Length: 256
Image (cartoon, rainbow, N blue to C red; front, side, top):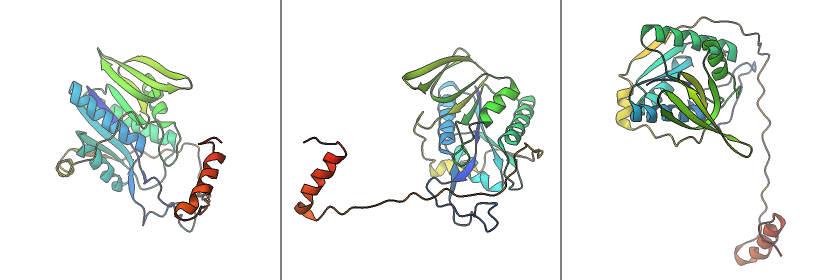
């Protein structure tokens, strides 16, 4: 079994986003970063599959040298090697990103063995484009199932499940195939210290992908409006009980 997991370095969920003065970039000076949550689950799923079936795993990302930190996190919990598609910091759109990943996949497969599974996050935590995994699957002429919450491998096939409005959709797909993973498929493990030390010694290839226009032009960034909140003090001690009961009735928790 040979698995590739594509991840993306994004600001930590819940961080306050501040833009540069020209509104073209995010001010990263005070931000923490991680892989997108869906992709953390994709990494964990790849590690679990390799632990069960044997084989090798590769984590890939497109970004600056700073993204190596997130790749090391993935390798610390069990990914065998990494591929950094190193950029100059420009924002790559979905079309250009998918094109760069496809080129890297083809080059890696020519040099070693083909990937049985390509995992992507269902969507990144920053852009939420839902496109890259599907575009890669289309370019490589591979079957693709998005938003999976369960996967089982048996006899060269993958049986995957995804949530539907009234239950589950179940697919049986011949490998190789592309899957986009949703958060909740598993609980990602925390990388141990010994794993972090070993990760720095694992193979990490650097490739400079060819920049390509994808027809999307950025005019400026605009942070979303912050949601306001209100707090009502119900009282102190036992004096707050009558008002607390009224509030519970208002929201339907208890009935008169």
